[in-house]
Length: 599
Image (cartoon, rainbow, N blue to C red):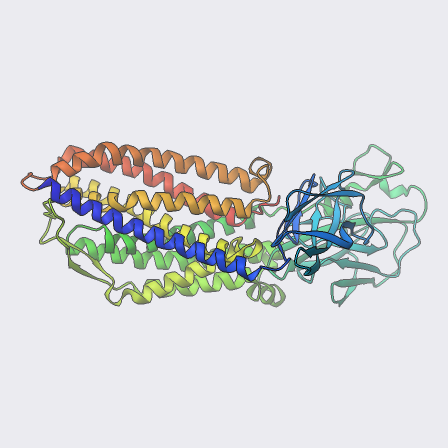
């Protein structure tokens, strides 16, 4: 009889691996299609990528084309923000890849790479890409932006100018379209007090006109904006009107901020007003909302998969699991609302400004706002539509199945297709709110992201539900059905973990700008912590798979009396620890969404 069980299990694993091979074949076909589509001399990849913001200057820049070729005409050039050529050497790293090495370290600012190359068959391709090197430090007067990828390109008067005549207006030009949010633009005097000002917009340029002429001394400008993706942008600059040292600044060394202009210091009150705002409260609110949303999504999707493909239990237990799915739909909707409130608060800079018409319009029409709308709507569908039913369990050769109450059953989707549609909508919102739109190839990023969510959900929910059921059944003194349930899940766990690891590695490679970003960015450090927790969970799972599951198989073989209660109790405790670790992993995943891999 054990032979029949082994044959059955081998068949199940072989079927799963056929699915994996089909997915791999589909990926290969997509890759082949992409290669055929770029058969001409087109730029395929670059490091840095187009539009990327870097926290450290790149030592080299690489361009990889679809065919072998060589530069013609102006060739390949590195340009600064003004369009001037930056001294650099261009060397072919291979027939299709060129490496640009700047002669000196690049400073903070905008850069572009222009190229004109000709393939061996005579086809000529020309184009350009841009990237930005952020300032090593940001602070008052720097003109640097905090958050988002938009920065101040130019200003009149220039940032940190001193001894100038009182300007009739202050003109600020940004690198991309933005909209004021919250406090918007503020013109400040030396005491950090806001001066009455009118603001006019012309494309990416804003003109601030003070109601009264500016007095001698230091003045500052702050801006709180939001870009087209809903990302906040805060920045500041200062300038000095009149010649020499103004008495209102205080004696050198009495406080304030060194301006770097002749020993002059920005007054302490103005320096404080120009500092980036403390967004700790709004960030915590948004992260809590995203964590609740992620937990709801993972548990809802995973519970549906587990109930259908791994559950062995009573009709009452199956109905309880569909009730859990409905609760997770409510959690997703609540999480989306809380995350949206945190984002509105963050954009406005203060809670009182979070619900102004301008802030609401800006957020709800942004990509981040639309993502939360999708997540909320999907959560409502899950909460209303998770109405499934139980179905007879297919016989498992060589395994005796006797659940606590009545004949063994599993879940069936039935009318739960509404919940499945809702989960698909939530996944679309999560992918939209993540980093999928920022990297290329986008199709691979989105496919890996969706597949990663599905396999993680199936694994996490299975571990949590097995722990709950094992502990509850053991406490009730009837662990029947637990062994068969563990065996059903064990047959798929290896494939799920393999897919999770592969998609996780692909996502990290696509998102991180370089390997060093793992230890130089907050995103990379949180990722390391997440991987460490996953490894701990995998170690517990491996112990259960190779030590506990074989004993379970023996205990539920034909003719056996059933699983040993002590064995089920030990399994419940181990999976409970594993479940706790995986919940922490989900929380860290929610934090990653709110961080930039560039800083």
